[in-house]
Length: 232
Image (cartoon, rainbow, N blue to C red; front, side, top):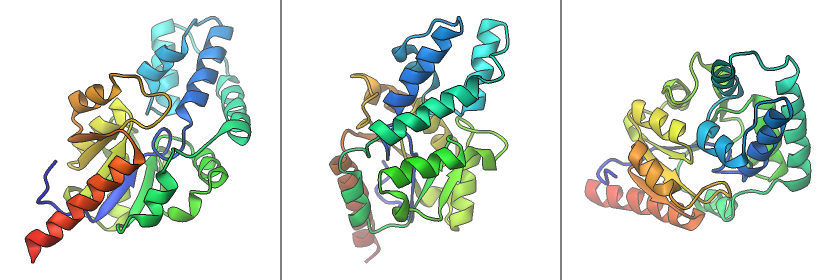
């Protein structure tokens, strides 16, 4: 991590970073794909599709399967995910406290659709930390791992990309942040993160990995303090 570059904006991914939703969504994706004749395990979904938009995931599956998914597949999956949110969804442990204490501007840049984003953040009480600075990949031409969404978020917030820190749990998200010219912090506090996930994020280009919200807060705070000291 470049400790001489002060962060002026922290861009958070949502699923798996703010809300512990990847375990729910990946389980449902695996169940529905298997039901329609494309046998897939929970771990396969986590490894292949975490961080990608539904449209990108659908394209990958159809190319691999050699046939289109049913027309109602996305509707069924999203309905089940939203219902699971209302019953099971939790914020990532410690993230609400981190956001209360974080002295930096922040926003969300996620592959999720706007209504799903808002639902997850509202159900977990995190929406007020970001409203109205919540950006979905539907706003740009290419989703992660392309840099478009992060660059869009930085432009909307009026911050140069080099002054942004991205917090990401997915390979696609890390690659997008790196391509955008931002410092990327890998984050492995989500329930879907396997034992080697941190190393995979580092291999994808993350500068450092935080395993908990407390570690993430320390990384962001220490960097800001060190930069302030350098400038005095």
